Length: 262
Image 1 (tube, one colour):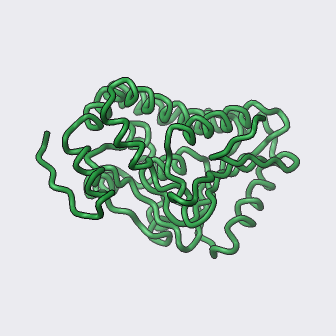
Image 2 (image 1 turned 120 degrees about the horizontal axis):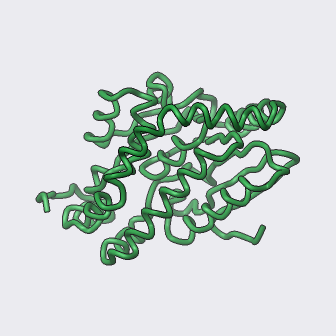
């Protein structure tokens, strides 16, 4: 595997670790990180020597979502917006549909796209200081249709609407109560807990695990296909709006946004 600057890939026996590595911006996603993360997921997914994958982040966050400086560039180009959205959705689909079990080891913030990456994994183990949320609405954006479906499946329609429309994030214990994460552990125990689960999964029959994942995913694919009708077009519309430009600028300037509905 080629050397990746924004993503670290480590392999130990049959377990791979994919580690987001932009700690200076809380592992926010820019073009380079997205491309490298897609490549890492693809290559680990197709490596027969790997039977379980752990995704985590360096520093104080799992992933804080899209890099706001990169987002400011995206909103100026229809082509770039569409390309980014398609790459993000393929990444999430690759994580969800691969035959190998995936574990998100969530430390600190998992916000926006960071939360969606965690939701696309099969398991989510959160440190006690984790915070998860679909906070897109605060930037004048929306979650991906697939991410919305995944959230509804985990927490139910009413709570999903609350989290998405208010743009709230929740602390680890609340995330556990809602079903967003499988377990909460002490921060210092996060890596060991994720590894312990990966070791248990590796002991299972690979073919049976892959088939079981496909059977489980099939139960929500009808909703995902319906949501896909609203996919790139609606997200691109938001990204090109004045409200999104205002939301991004306000976040960078650390002030409250003034949305105008256009």
